[in-house]
Structures are given as C-alpha cells and as structure tokens.
Image (cartoon, rainbow, N blue to C red; front, side, top):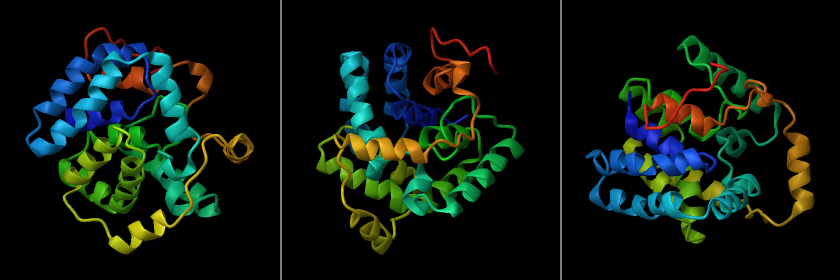
Length: 232
C-alpha cells in the first residue's frame, strides 16, 4: 500500500471531522516520503495545517467553490479531456471495469474519474503503474496546479507533488490548451445548475449508502478512530 498516494487522495477529499482528526498522521506520512523533494513537502504543510485546524464550515465552503463550482478546477479528470461528449461515458465505463478487474470497488457516490478515487485505486497498484497513469494525466495535473497557484490556494501543492511522483514533464502544448479555456465563475449559480443537470448519470454506488469517500479511505489507511462503512 502506498500511504503517500492515500494521503494525497485524502487531502483532495471533501473536508470532514474525521479527516481533521487524522491530519497529524496524514501530515507525518507526507513529511517522511523521500520521493518528494524537501520543497514539495514544505509546500504541503500549509494545507495540512489548514485542514487540521481550520473551521470546518469554512473549509467545506472553500472546497465547494474551488472544485464543485469551477469546471476548470474539476477533480473529475475526464471533464478536462472529453467535456460532456459521449466519449466521456465510454471512458468512464472502461475505467470502472479496470477498477473491478483489479478487485477495487469504489464505495462512494463520486464518478470513477474523480481524482481522489483514482489515487486510492493507484495506492494499491505497483508504483510503475502509478507513474504511467499519473504521467498520462500530467498535463491535467499541471493545468490544475497552475490555476490553483493563481488563486493562491494551498491545494496547489497536492498537484505539484503528484507531478513529482509522475516523474515526467507535462506536454506544454497540452497544458496551454487547457489553460486557454476561460476560468469558471463559482458564483454563477445559473451555470452551476446546468452542470448539475448534465451530471445526472452516476457510475458509483447509491449515494444514499451514506459513506463519505474520505471516511472509507481513512479506514483503509488504518488511521486512528477511523471505522469502515457498513456498505463494504
């Protein structure tokens, strides 16, 4: 199990009390991984500190404004590749089959291409496979990193770390193409309503199962106080 990938996955999950309680150990995992440069590990500290000590409601609001209301910052990777085309649905089905063939069943209402879900899956795969997958998504990770740096968000450090683990330089032309897309306005509620209307299809388990992805991953990471969900 690659605990660093699990830790990075949790940092990108929706904030919760359980996540806050686990932040000391999550921070310790990240601080001890020599695959990341000292600068990258230092850059993660502000986010670790904010998630550990910040007001939960403020953290939730910040997360929603960044990742749920800004399509250009979506954590659903295929959003950046296929948009709302039919190709996205086919890619989603293929990814879910890849998960299941490896014995991994996401216990979450998130889509299969949701980055925290993908990172949890990769944490149980050989590192060479992880690097190949992250390398394929390097241009998306770099575009997200650049947009978050512009917003002075501490979440940018997570994407910088993932790029280091990928071990490749992202394609500049592909990054530029993504960055040419206009920034989304998180306060444009009419546009947000359209996003929800376009996102009715769900590939994961029923959301009514009541198991937040962050809680399930905390349990699988064997962190103190974390218990697995019943619907496992």
